[in-house]
Image 1 (cartoon, rainbow, N blue to C red):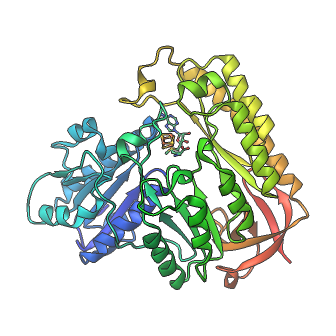
Image 2: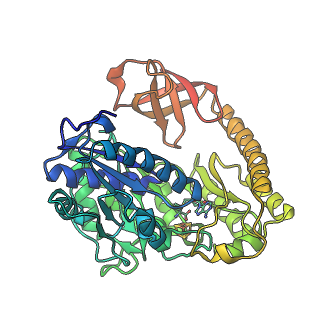
Image 3: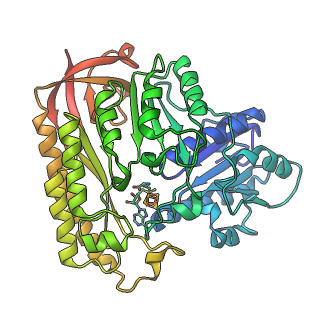
Length: 443
Ligand code: SAM
Ligand code: SF4
């Protein structure tokens, strides 16, 4: 970093965590642009640096503190640079306590992102430590400006917060209770992005399956999928996340029957043992989960089913862990995000006895990944020689001479082709299967 700020009217956002945070960062960018800031190419050029943080696991928090230390060291040399800290970590009182007198100029939470311009303005006017975090969610604020990322695929929030209180999870504490956006506001936003040239939309919520509860009008997620499908210009619809306990037959039929909705369902299992599932407060059993996933595969031909899995939840025995491996082998997930349980202070599981040692968690994670990766490879191999419709997203991150694209089932296909194909839906033949991607050629 340089020692002085050449252009204090530039912003740089550092984003951690899930798609919701990615989307929030787009809104933060929109709010800052509304104040006259423009995007900086690097941290070095920024007059304001915004942290949008994640607190879902301890490792995520550690990364934030590491980076914050780096940025604050620079701020000491370049005091005119403003540092703002928002997102899930900012909702936690113990984090706010740590930030006091740290050099951070502005702290804002997940419920008052829309207040950021006002808070930044106060800091620009010389006020020290502008800390404003709402403890509780307010009404859904509409509309919010935003500066979206890629020009092809857009995230759209359909709801905020979560009511499920899985015992390991901090999200209900940092994101508040579940609130759905009104369908007309969502559809308006989707029409706007379609007009801007986006072709794919991913509808976001902690549990999209309970969309619509609490709204004045009678509307559920299946209805919303149909309304989204009617928007001209949008060719692919994705969504995440679906809680297995709330996945209705109506929704499965709607996914199967709505051509634009991609055949991919992310239904996190979390654990394979009924005892662990009960103590996680997931409110389904392994038997019900198996019924659900076989129904999805039966009614939605070619559906990819993906999952989140946690190892080392308090009290998880070797037998319980083997139940998770058994479920992975039975369901055969196309992909899974796998995590070691991380103690989150304030959640119910943090106080449970029999916390599992770090060594056992690591060992179980390795065993789980070995099984899951093998299954993913085998599923990918069955696709060799087939022809798939893909949306061409842009240059491949690992090899910019190639193009990266995505099948409807969310598999990444890398192939050689002209940059002119970016943004198009084309057919490719799968030539080789890897664990996390496929290689292909245009047909
Ligand atoms: N709402 C989604 C759902 O119900 O599946 C996911 C939200 S959470 C941000 C994403 C994933 O992080 C969860 O599915 C879970 O597997 C994982 N996760 C949440 N809390 C965790 C914890 N304390 N330790 C490890 N993994 C955790
Ligand atoms: Fe967390 Fe469970 Fe809510 Fe997902 S459903 S956000 S895992 S509490």
